[in-house]
Image 1: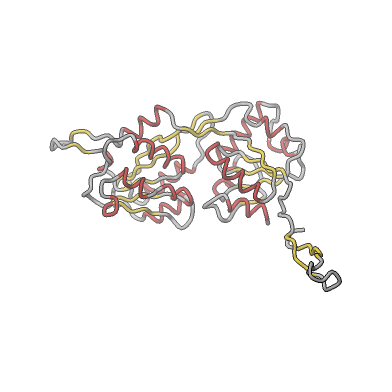
Image 2: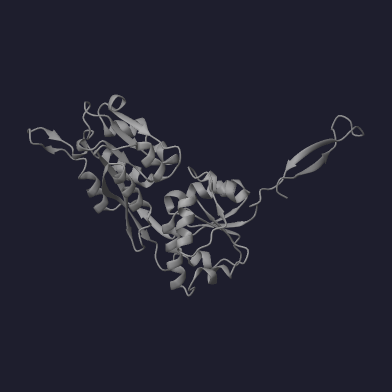
Length: 314
């Protein structure tokens, strides 16, 4: 049915016996009435649910990782923001020693913004070296004027927002260019209960290779959702597709499946022989393949979830 139109016939109200009007009725989307599972954490679930429903799919949310700030991660961020006396006796924030902040996730931006909102004054003074704030894809929409105003007393003159052309950490590194020994703060997740995917370690290594000095701060926790997190998925009698948006989600799902009696991914797929596995972007696809999960569909536009839904429609 994809790519075709069904013609419906309507009689003209003016002339009952006159010519008929042929009006095209769009064909249903290929995922219409299809059951599509996805494993994103809660902060992304609402948007992906909405996009799937817009195309007539039946979304099944089965989160396999939990993403959240903790008192410990909040304290870690604050340690870079709170002012203290410097050698000259003046008060300055440790952030003044940095030239940039690199956000690799929406959650990192949100966690950082929450800590900024608790301060009496912005951590960056109105005068100083240019300061770069960079984010990926639609995440960068959170780097608003309000965010920058909490960061710096004179954001229009001192700060700039950098959004790389591709929504990947590698593209961010290329867009930042040579660091010339400057420090860059990297608010990234503290991963618990699953192995840390190579994305962030690779990102930090790539920054160092470009002569940046990356400083890692645990801005939030990404943890396994627990042994029963795949239970909702495995209860499904019929499942047409599953969407992964990170390698951590894949590992969390596999770990839960093993505790529920499914030793490997092939055993899981036997429940639904026609299952389509979709990955949001090549980084997630590569991570899934490394974990033994064959991927059928990869979104080529991965700056937003529209890309993975479009890939399912092809």
